[in-house]
Length: 508
Ligand SMILES: Cc1ncc(COP(=O)(O)O)c(C=O)c1O
Picture 1 (tube, rainbow, N blue to C red):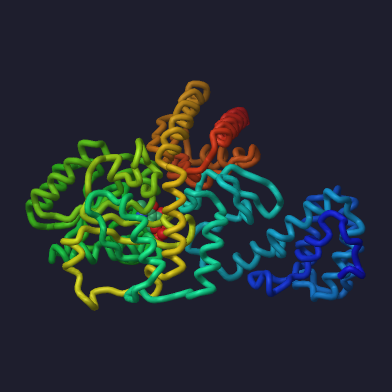
Picture 2: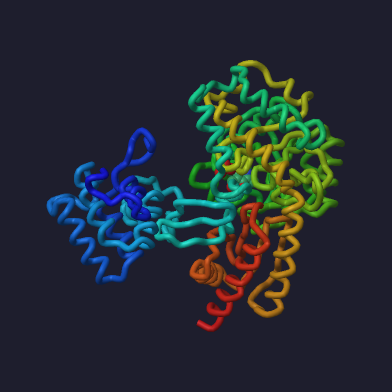
């Protein structure tokens, strides 16, 4: 390589590494495509220079090469020499960083998704995230945003994590996978760490890989305990997309295509209607209740009242019914209101019989669990359930490191401080912009009503141009779930972006 390049030219080494991959160091990637080179040139240079340099690069690599295909090593080296000579130090460094982040162009990534992904949901292709740092997300075009989604609350500790990366590397090098039934060192480490965070005597774990699975398994465990099929769920509730989780999710459009709108074991009750719950329990039509203490996805952030939460606990006790609190989203300090509020149940001061946890449990790595009391878990018998990946060594390593970090960072305290700041800022903005309706903030679960779903989409689009990215909404409500490590300055920049976006939207 030294034949081709002047050593010590800033960015050159990285530029070469980005174009010609070393498969030992980066087994996860390949050589760059010329389409990516063109995209990057159009970002780092003006149009004229970008076109000229790309033509030179193409000539050097070989005119006949397909711009969509990865360059071979020799062509990549020739392209790198041309690029290195044509770019100034700053441009070269910027190009090298972008190549490190992706060797494929944004359009190429979008194209394979469009071609091969089953369209189960709307494809979000407004930006391609390639790097994270705390609450920031950087996209494939080198733009940075404060993230208001935290991947549905899965990246509470931030969008990249060096300690988890190292832990996963170490664990994968030693032992990558073991089934749920097998005892494991990583799991023992994790269990020692997590116990002080758990509400009451919720100490027995059954690990899964997604929140939906954890909800499904929580229903099985509750049914095995009560010996009865009936389950009460609530209007506005959302519990995931697996079969059982969909059955107890309120939105009929999610259930009907799969024939899950007529399940005779599910009884939906209006959110907050304690009397209806008690009647169903008293009539013996149900012995389990599932709820989110702060309804998120489907309800646009609707907290239970403290009376309702306590009342549910009381009626469940009275009728020996199992209270399942789905903490997949609310868990791990997301809705903290004070010290030690790791779960919504602690904020509400109720101890459920079962909780489901997930999302940021593994700091962004997929790991979830059902957690219950010994007297309930003991009703499960060998053969009642099983999981290939549940509680595997990688998942437990991520959960262990994430748990340690959450405690070291004292996330509940941070959430209380940032939540106050958001609340104050948003209240001021609602005085200024009359289009803001009700504000609902519980910890860092934030719901903001605007005047229409179209306004929500427009404001989200405009906020993006001001460096804040929000993609979550429910009807005419924005839902913000920023990483819990968001800084005070970042909160201010989000509020400024919201202010500017609203101003532009209303005057458009
Ligand atoms: C409350 C709640 N439960 C369950 C789930 C499902 O989790 P997953 O998408 O990991 O299956 C979600 C996901 O948004 C959720 O918010």
